[in-house]
Length: 238
Image (cartoon, rainbow, N blue to C red; front, side, top):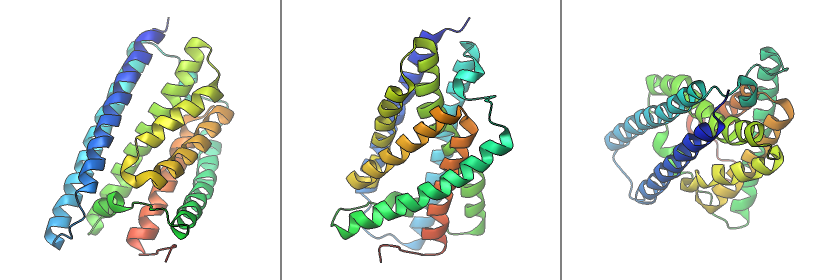
């Protein structure tokens, strides 16, 4: 029988730790206004990529172990849903592309209206070599997408709803607010845009019951942002 209280408690601990880490990242980004030498940027990017992969990978491992230990049903986490894997991937790719365009539109509109959209963290993580791009796209971004969707969608919506009968739509709003707070390094405008994206992802999770679909969508959004802005050097606001 599932030990819901134990799993939800561990999920709460991971959420608090993640928000604390996000706050530290925000402080670091706010202190990075001074331009750095290329060598320093390369070292910083490599260290940041390693830090993100290790920290979020560790958090993901803790949640997976907690789900296994507490015997949370896979269906509650959006695993083994009625949507086929291929269908979930298709939904994720399409949704991710739409969310990317919506995010860019929102960011451009905010900047045109005079609201700051802080992109320094993405700049610090921007790869400088083919090897770093491979690590970013093939390791770091998949880990981020998996962990954040497992936490904010599967655990905070799926598990809590299944274990305690709370409305998944109410949980979608609450988890999206936490999701937004976890991206404070992107500035106030970034928090608002991220919160809106999180709410759409939460809605997609509730409607499809598929964790894979929202993981893919999350990855597509992040990957397109890096490739378009940092790889191709496109500045939509400009």
